Image 1 (tube, rainbow, N blue to C red):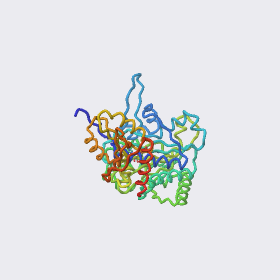
Image 2: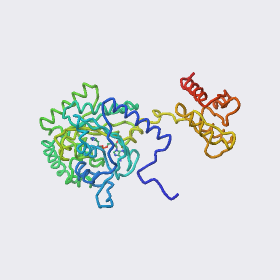
Image 3: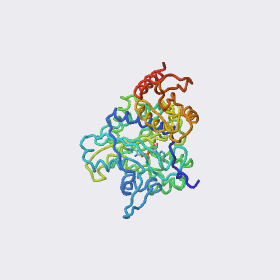
Image 4: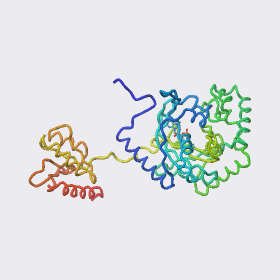
Length: 422
Ligand code: HAM
């Protein structure tokens, strides 16, 4: 074999693809129930869009972007996430700003050059929702509620909501300095990456998974102790709102997330059975991003769910069974092949119908028909009594129907009875 799927990517094959469709369908209905509407942005954007939002010092921008030049020398990047593209679109399209708040969602592949492992890919899919135009705690609560509703709708209820606040432009710089001072004192105990982060992005040290860093991190000052009055009040209001909705949460002062645009609330939802990559998704407020992109003052909040992780966490039992056709049309003579096609087409709509396109013998077609799991085989050319029908499950010839219309009605009725379990 000459070619292989690129490292960190994979094919989603029939069988699994039905699970994806099912997840997509459920998500779309949940989004509709909450009044969120879909936006489909391009898979690539100007590189600067991500540098300016996700942040120059983040791992995503420094190490994980798929960046290339197009033929005119423009620097473009395969989107590593969906929030910055959505904000770009929001500012570019007045229609999206017509309603305030704007409730929007997206679903699609994202690209990050990460070290592949279970639940971590270089092309992965996200479901994301964004609410632009509210600074109030009710918006935070709606977001987390929607996130949980999507998970619950596909059977994932054993989850933990982790909640933190990162402050804003008033209190975060103070916290950044106090944490930089603390880690500088303990520099010798930090791993190589964290020593580097001390300069570039000291907050990210809190998120380091290297075991030797854990004791130093445990002693670090908590962001919650340095929130300014407004941020502290907002955080309290968010907690009250979640309690009012009976949503349990764990306050996690070490939760910092890997993107720079966050202000105030950040959250993740973890599922117990996911192992190391246990975040099904995460999000938070980004009250400055629209303004940073040159737009009006527009506080906003959103989240994204990793679809591979969600499917991993829900497990096989929640997925729909592989589809079987209702009918196979079998041609008894080689010259009836096109009559078979025409009949299959006439049956389709209420029924799923397959037909041989390999010129197989009628015996071989019968074998193929039973392999597909079709409940019925119907035969062409039409006999003197009409189209003969065999029930493949019972191995019985059942009836003959005079016309294609009569056949379609008869089969549809039977199929509905079988599906109703009668
Ligand atoms: P994020 O935490 O970078 O946030 O990604 C969200 C989710 O995407 C993760 O929790 C995980 O489930 C999934 N994910 C991330 N990287 C990978 C990967 N390499 N392989 C598989 N799954 C992955 C964001 O992307 C923000 N845009 C979320 C947000 C929306 N914040 C505000 N609005």
